[in-house]
Image 1: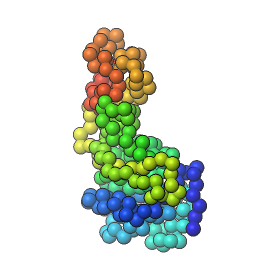
Image 2: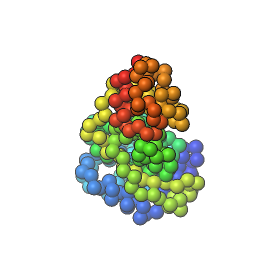
Image 3: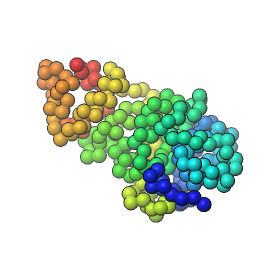
Length: 250
């Protein structure tokens, strides 16, 4: 068979009902091109290979899993990309969908990779550590709302789909898991630059217990900081609030 590598954040799905549930969400969308991130032992892959009339690729870093997949599912051989998802270019020139039981140790980095690919994505459906999934989907004012909530929701509509029990994996992770769905926003928030937006959000939440005025004071003039919005804490601001504030940064 194969071994499991904790260093790569591997935790493989073994529950067939969960696999089918994830595939069913994907198949609600029309797509011709599909990338699976981290196929591992092929729990989802075996179903994806059965979808007719699509162009399918899977990116996997672990050479042992690459060899296992080739032996177990020979038709996948030409569809495998042996590399890190964080290092590859977009796998298709056309619009494509993404699916995966994402390695938990790089799941946040994968999300930011999806931002880079946003204009080419139909949808992304991924398994995450529950805590990460909740943060990505969190609304303003909640305790879980933070940097990753704002940065991802600026580019995607996020839907928290369902949770997955630890016993559905091999080995059973010490954390709970959840599946979320990302679809690119048709209209992005108006911001001065992406760099300014990301910087403002990170600085604001770096001291989230302080009033915004104190947390971001070096980014704005004294006059601008007198506006009522700066009486709030970062967690009270919407994505659009942060985007609008970028135009007033020094």
